[in-house]
Amino acid sequence: MASLQSSSVIGSVAYSSTSCSRRGTTRATINMPKLRTGGLSLRLPARDLVPEVLDMGVGLSAATTNVEKIYESSTNRNSPSLGSNVSDPMVIAKLHAIMEAVADRVEMHQNIGEQRDNWNSLLLTSINTITLTAATMAGIAATSVGGPLLALKTSSTLMYLAATGMLVVMNQIQPSQLVEEQRNAARLFKQLHGRIQIVLSSGNPTNSDVEDAMKKVLALDKAYPLPLIGVMLEKFPGTVEPAVWWPQLRQRQEKPMKRRDGNGWSVELEEEMREVVGVLKRNDTEDYLRLSKIALKVNKILSISGPLLTGIAACGTAFMGSSHGSWAAMVGVVAGAMASIVNTMEHGGQVGMVFEMYRSNAGFFRLMEETIESNLNERDVGRRENGELFEMKVALQLGRSLSGLKNLAASSSKKGEAIEEFASKLF
Image (cartoon, rainbow, N blue to C red; front, side, top):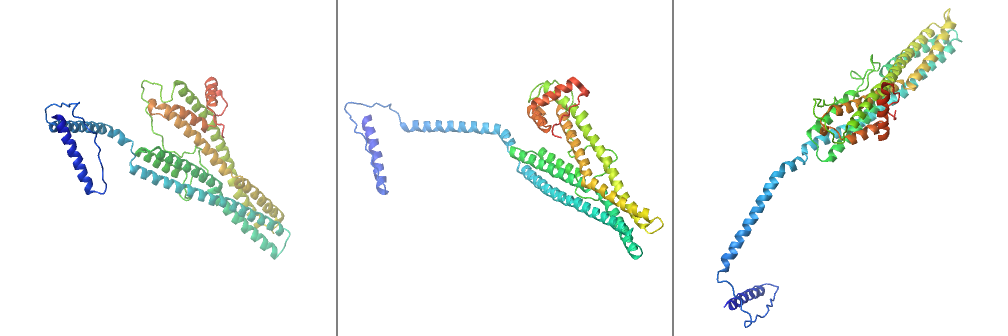
């Protein structure tokens, strides 16, 4: 009975397949094996197959529904962590805007630096030419009489007065120092541009990165202003301080807590960094501040001497032709020649640039000191910068190897303040 039912079902399937293929363009033939009904009897349970198949479908759909619910619940649990790794498009847009402004500032400082370098060379050449021409005319006037004497001494006096006025202005703005300021500003803005690129390439910038970049841009604008009138840096300050171009560092957590090693930090590394800070304060920063004061004193003397000598030369040429004409001519010629020498020493030697370079170097060491102390004051090592990476950065900034940095710290711990070695090997 069961074999006959199976044969009828198979036959109906074959018939339906044949009828469907006749209506299409492709014909399929199903060859079924011949079943022997004599030797094998297939006994199936006497129950309907349709309800059983329906029950299997219901069970399968229920299992699928349970799997979907489990997946949705796991997705919901993981969604906050996944969302935190996705960057905010507005944050990225802000960082790109800041990076564009920084690139524009780099270009501006480079262009203005080149312009002010031209000022220094052109003004130096022009003033020296005027001064030497006036001295030559004064010498010729000493051998003349009558009308030529009056014309020569008048021309020489006017040229000396013009040179005096130009020297006063030039010594006030110090073009060579302005050029060094623009060089430093361009270099620091390039560094900031690279750091913003690194933050963007990390793939997860935050609003704190935007605020930090904004503060650094504004601090650089304040440290190295572009205009000359009103906001120009004081060229002859009363007290010499290191240059400061960074925002105030965030105050770290200083409350006592149970210290633990980790994040690349150890007790030995902390002691090493403290010794390095001590050497930077005692030797490097103090030495560059001392050199800055010397350069400032020399620049002040030269800045006063140049206009004073041209002024004396102008007075000497004005009294030529009188009863003391020979002495007046000598004063006019000698003072003019000395003024040319002083002007060349000051602006040709770029004493103002040297002062600014020393001041910037002292600022560089001051920044290193504050950065190291800021990390050491943070008692939670997890919030510090990685210790091994930080040690490598400090070594590179000082031009030392890691072993050389450790040797410096060891020497400082043994000798204390008596150590004469400088922390920096670069400058």
